[in-house]
Amino acid sequence: MTDIADNISSIRRRMAQAAERAGRDPRQVQLVAVTKTVGVAQIREAMQAGVDILGENRLQEAEAKFAEIGQQVKWHLIGHLQTNKVNPALAIFDMIHSLDSLHLAQALNRRTAGRRVACLLEVNLGGEETKYGVAPQEVCDTLRQLDKLENLEIQGLMVIPPYTEDPEASRPYFRQLARLAQEGNNLSLENINLRHLSMGMSHDFEVAIEEGATMVRIGTAIFGPRR
Ligand SMILES: *Cc1c(COP(=O)(O)O)cnc(C)c1O
Image (tube, rainbow, N blue to C red):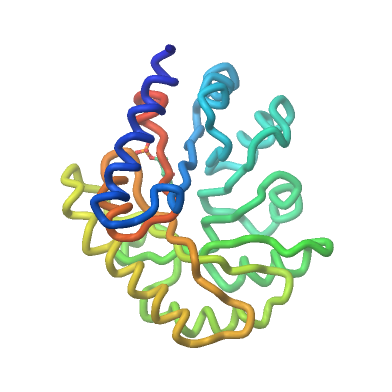
């Protein structure tokens, strides 16, 4: 086995164990392999090892890789999207984890060309100025507005908590995101069913799964440190 295949199999094992600790079905948790800065040869190794969702945070970089890899995998956008890049993004991405403003949602909704686009609302739980996303106290109001955008399918919430080495420090943020999703579902909006929680990265994905993550976004633990 290559290092990458080896890493993936150990991550999958740890994912399953975390799910079982929480009394969850491991099949409820999807691995999004974060491939920013990673070359196509390495991505293909990950695909050989069963990876079927790639997470990219920059449109331009994703476009170059998409030209080579195409639709053998699902492409998920996990980084900020400018409203003037909506069209090329829609040509590639199957899901937008980083729907971070109503403004972006409206721009997407205008240009989906008939399909319903799967999105997750990004929440800035740490209140960090350097991060995108809506504030937790705005989530319910934003969902009410998003409910009216008929070309978007809001499937859940996403968070990037403030970085710390200690995975336990992320737990309160993950728990809060799960609670916000519950509140959102309690609004009983016609077009919104929050069933996904995109949370957990290389250093804290097990804690995220214990708190209900359905998608973990993992880069370094698969491909090694980024340059
Ligand atoms: C880079 C990135 C990740 C992956 O981080 P790792 O620590 O390398 O696993 C996850 N989510 C987002 C939004 C990212 O930008």
